[in-house]
Length: 606
Image (cartoon, rainbow, N blue to C red; front, side, top):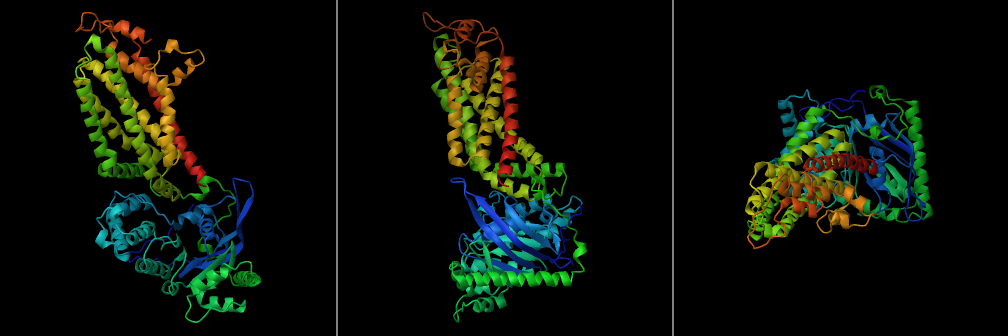
């Protein structure tokens, strides 16, 4: 399949391309309500056209179907959609169309801990072919920064730039490949009048360079209305008008709607659209359909000679792979760029890295002071077990809960970039796992290194290594439980699910009740409790493997024998290897679960 992305010219203009015309007719979209299973008709037999070189605005009151129409035309909605979409007279094929178009959503999320230039560079590395030289990429970035007037915030973190600068940055990210078709969902949302006008001037400039530029605008001022070449007016899912703005008021006047002098045309058509039950609106809808029928007849009578230059094949499948462009760089480049970005973000994230490491050090020191040198005292064995259990609990919670927040921050960016074909799911999955490795190793290592020796645990290296292995696996298990819940659920539900899952498994860990004291029908739960194997493994690392008798500071110590103590907890036998293997298998299952959760989220968004 040929790449339909327009070639890039250093001055930001499109190299001479076939004149693009996007037409749609009899477009319908229905949505089933989950409560009473009724069908809600969002779009009803809509028709219209968008032309290259002209800036088109979609207007309509709230709930008119503006964003739904834009999502369908951009290829982001394929279910429950019927109708015809033509590009230069040929049926639109989703895969090819997505390769030559871009969609900038209203809430265009980017990583706040990257600078503006770093954000653009990552986009260039993922979207431009591998054969593109470094100097060429830099030239493209410089041109985009100049065209969008981002010089002043070039080295500023994205979280610190203004709303208008963020809107222009979102345009710049999509301009990397210089797409000939661009869709914008409310690009002026949240901006003041000056910033809105600046953004719309940039969009007008992009359109007049030869692109199809379509944007949803909620309530444009009269000053903004002067920038639009074409207008499409929606009311309750039906098109009242689609065509040049200069003919819009005359069309409304023919249907009996006279716009007062010096009145904002945008406000006027929105007010008319709110009267959709009026018979005269039916006249507007009929007029638009008749106008579009004449346009189709003209297109058939005078076919575009350049149509054949863009080959589009028929596509009726709504399969996931068809609505997603193919990655433009190979897997190794994707992995390298994503891994570098993840590490950059983590290094600058105070909550994810700095405070997290400080927290592990402070709690380890506090634990060492509270349980100072009790690990080698037979009289304080029970207290030492409580200390070991606290280590397990803190390492688990300290890695599970922060992971929920981190994945929720990353998820919107992942969805946008994945659906735009920036990288494969496999590349994102592997880079995410690899980027999390350093932190999951550093935090438990620091915590255990401090608390282990301050609490007086046996100084043998092999026992410390066994305890370290258990703590690292605990950190990874907690991390991926948090990641999976954060991927599948929203914040409030995720914060509930992780403790709700963990508490029952804690109960069956063997610390609160001996396994032999459980009822027979509850014992199978112990076999799937990861806390049981974590607790067993740490206990055997400290007290197993012929540790022998413990020093007793009192006249009599009941648990002076480590073997007797392990037997009391139903953990006799040197089976640390079995516990370790089971934990590794559970970790592998969680890794698979994380991969599956990414698939679920992707399919849920279709």
